[in-house]
Image (cartoon, rainbow, N blue to C red; front, side, top):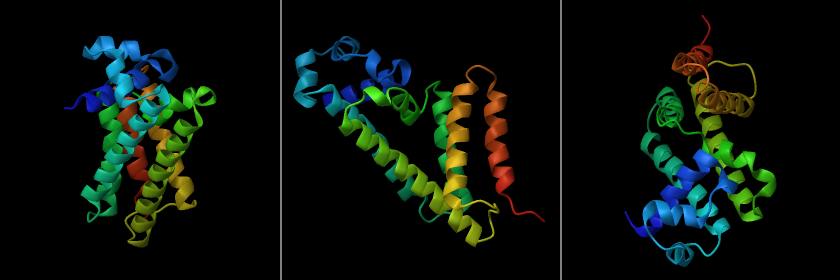
Length: 185
């Protein structure tokens, strides 16, 4: 892993553990054992680092989309849900949820990148739902984009809420999403 990649990875961890406003370059330098000047070499400002961290998440989604592009809509949906399961298993929170908490204090460049990331996820899931409905794999009454937003918000919320309740609640919500999408007989 390069120094740049290590810095982004540590920033991602700190954003999702403490929040964007609660960490500094000094925290990163202490944790990965480099000078803050090295961080500034790669990321002149904290906003540059924030944008790079979100871009890393965008790249991961694009890679996942490509990996499942030729799979069934159900497999694609399960891949999306598995991302949230991984976040839950790692005892993290979604980067969007974490940064949205600090939204009013973020630089416009971070807000813009975060909006693009959110739109990417919404658009991808909306497409999965449309494809699944057209193939009679999914059945739902609301607009596909609305259903996508409902699924996303349910998953993001249950990742956080199940930290206070039980893992069973996370599984219950995930399974309910899949069950509710099954065509009615």
